[in-house]
Length: 282
Image (tube, rainbow, N blue to C red; front, top):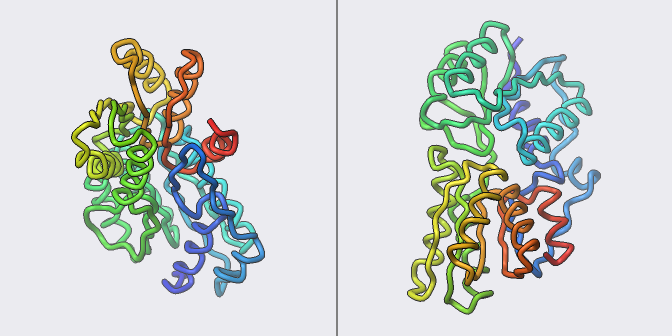
């Protein structure tokens, strides 16, 4: 049995619209996150969705230790349970490569899953895996990153350039259009990392008195911690911090708090810890 594409799209839209995942937001000082739709509202908007018979989906999870992807995985599994759908999680190991994920996709095809919800670390490298699913008649919907090829039936993602640019706009306003801004980049080997970096530069480069200090954290709070400590030593007049995801933003906050320095921090993703930091005014 193959799930109809209309059914699959309805389910995945509902899953992706879970309250914690409705947007990968910009968290900034003095900002107030928009209230999430209630569960009842979401069910009216996107569900319930029922298949003609029981079926199972594969959720390809990357960065299994990252709060965003943990929250997303939990929401996928919870919503699937509500709709009587089986979702098996194929988590890419923390040190896994795109070769490992293509192998996982081949396993999904061999085991005859009826749909794939795909997160990937490599937009180009995952194409052979998508094509294997295409050839087997298994529909694929992408999450967060648009693959470079193969056939997908839909994508749920943030406009990374626009969102990061809005973060840059907030920073430019907060610092009066001048000063040094530490840019804690995501992994620039990853498409989302590239796009968020592009968006920040798009917003800040028109300001001649703003200096952008680019540093690649590879999405990791541990790297952001060391980087922020080093930059604060070399540039004690640092005016603001932008982080391409929330863990580095919170790591920067830790360093700045220890140093007794209160400057604007903008994070990206809208994870629970990031939103709590916004609500706390830090």
